[in-house]
Amino acid sequence: MGLRAPPLLRAVRAARRRRGLQLTRTTSSQAPVFDRELKLRHRARAAAEDAAGVAYLREAAAARVVGRLRDVAAREEKKTALDLGCGAGHLRAALEADAVDGDVAGGIATLAQCDAAPEAVAACASRAPAAGFATTAVVADEERPLPFDDASFDAVLSSGSLHWVNDLPGALREVRRVLRPDGVFIGALAGAGTLGELQYCLAAAEEERTGGVAPRCSPAARLADCGQLLHQAGFRLITVDVERVQVDFGDAFLLLDDLQRMGEQHAPLAPAPLGRDALLAAAAAYQHMFPAAGDATALRASFEMTFLIGWAPDTNEPAPVRARGPG
Image (cartoon, rainbow, N blue to C red; front, side, top):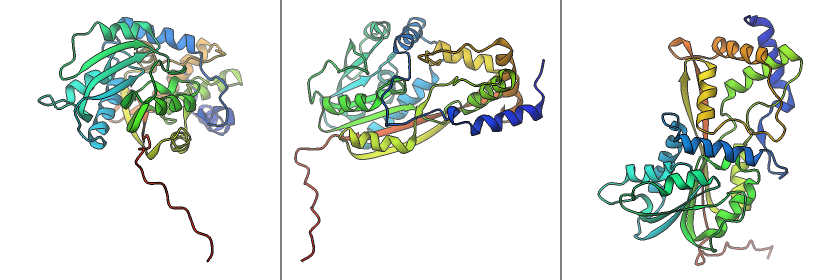
């Protein structure tokens, strides 16, 4: 049974007006948003299956993080870096792919990889030695105090895991703690524009079929808040930018399957089952409303990558000049 276009469009407009569907995260409350244990099971499953063929988002994020590292970090030998939320080792692979004749981005000589999922750490540890730099792998949760001493790393890198952290401000404070003076943090996380088409179609179909709406996609940190979060964590020389990636799929179910296989499906604390009728309606709406460019038989999905760069203050950094009063 297909959707009638006029009611669907009215439902979409209503969904956009509903405050409960503004799937963004604010910095004022640290109440848990995600079921962390469920998300770790998602990560473990993705690591066990190696997410073959569906790791394109993590790979793209890792390549862009390494590119930014090469742009901003001076090349000095024997630097130590931390890959926070390493997953299956996409950042390590990006560093290897970027290196030319032993020239590793940022002068990295040792890369410590950590992830909350033991299966992901085991997958990283089982790989052959990296070309051009040493690696270690340990189990460590981004939501908890990291098992590293203060000022342990010249760089902390993260490519696609921090958007699943309940306490993002706390995680950034930990990153700042383990950075050496003048060390750099470069992170990539999903932005608020990710899967906007899917959000709208699920909301419209559910509201039309049931008269109510539950959040079906994970909230993301707002771009306007990211710089403030870095500043509150103690970073300086902050840069925040966004890149958008569009991926085409044959239908909505292929998109949902990819999200599940890469461990990026929703992990709410209070899941609300979506009925089969509403799901089929959402899939039909998606196909009708968001066709891929140049191919009406496929659909498009938008992914927004937010990149954060911040530097730990240098102990030799000049203190800011205090404003003088009158006279």
